[in-house]
Length: 153
Image (tube, rainbow, N blue to C red; front, side, top):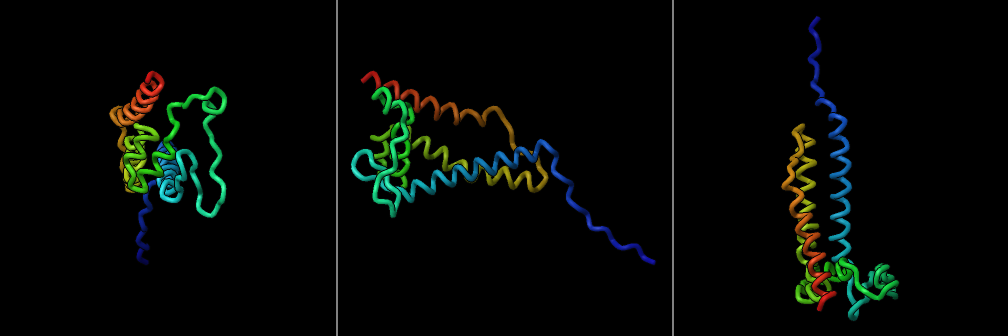
């Protein structure tokens, strides 16, 4: 009798890679949701962000503005993202000058996390480097800088 050929099963992912897969899926989903929402929402007036089909604006979520009357560093990012998705870059800069930079950062997360998931799926190590944190620090710095600049002026 001839032995049946055995089909090779891909090796199971190491445990620490499974956590990488989970994190990449979470960041991918969040990035798609944020960019997708920016195409769906609309802006009415200077402050109202609206969801199609709902007659009233989304509630203001900035606790800093509600409690102390000052904008937080992230104030205007939602309106900035919606403006960018509508092609209104000047409006986006008015809502939050760091908005376009942060928008590009979030947008780039989609192909990046897809690429990382593909690598893991092919059995390759995910790319890891301390340099991957530089864009996070740049975006954070831009948000803080524009906030401090607006507070001073």
